[in-house]
Image (cartoon, rainbow over all chains, first blue to last red):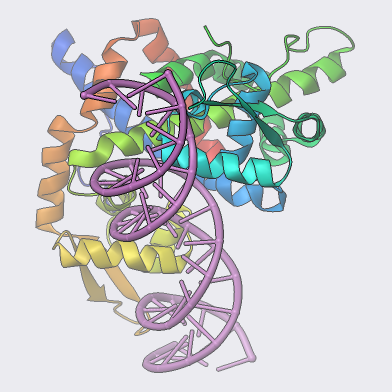
Length: 162
Length: 162
DNA sequence: TATTGTTATACTCTATAACTATA
DNA sequence: TATAGTTATAGAGTATAACAATA
């Protein structure tokens, strides 16, 4: 057991003056949250291999599904990526017939991207057998742990939007 | 207000037979968790710009800091990446003098990678002003929300290890 | 032969800068 | 001039396959 050198406190920060230990606890929380989130993302990416779409594409398609027709720039904002990144994602979705492009009714610079019937079908199909690995792993949690995640997810979403 | 990020239907799955709605709720949880985690990762990556190290490098360095000298392959496993990926990360850390390589005492195929004094200093420096953005955002949460995250983090870690 | 690690190569994701078309 | 979007280009992160050194 190689000594925990420095980063990781045995003491989560319960000791001294409220403000000081509070800050320490927050830093520790931020650090551990960051690492946990990164590793889970890697794990999720590794698991997507059998999917026809990458996680990024699936996430964009999901946003299209929920949001309805939307401009590329707006979709980029929704997905928190830069417009050129979204251009590529949309190109793939269009190529595969999962999304369709229509001209904006009044502004000819803009397009409106919408999920296609095929895209919707894929989402439905996916919804049935989606996230198989994650669902499987979630089954191994206790109901209390799943509840804890349900509470945490909206908070994580807000952090991602901040 | 462009509704809900998550993939989900209007009906979270509260209806029918326990097992069925339980499964639906788990799928919904998996889906929303996946999307939230992806976006938070993007947000975190975007925030790392001023750092000298990328998140990936910092995460590996942090593991070195916590675990002590360790072989490249073992570090790759710890970080949940393939050995060639870790080779590159270690190369950067070595170049910058943040990690050092020593021969394994008995097996000449192996190396032992350890954090260097400079690496430890950087971790300490980072620890002071680390995750500034995340800490800042965490400050905007209520204590109850931060507690919810503290409960969730170990669960997320287990998911990442599964 | 099996294991540890590296090199070679390629693909995904993302970004910034420069450009085109339209407002 | 300003905005929406694309193209060009680059860099980080990751993977698989093939190889070298050692066990």
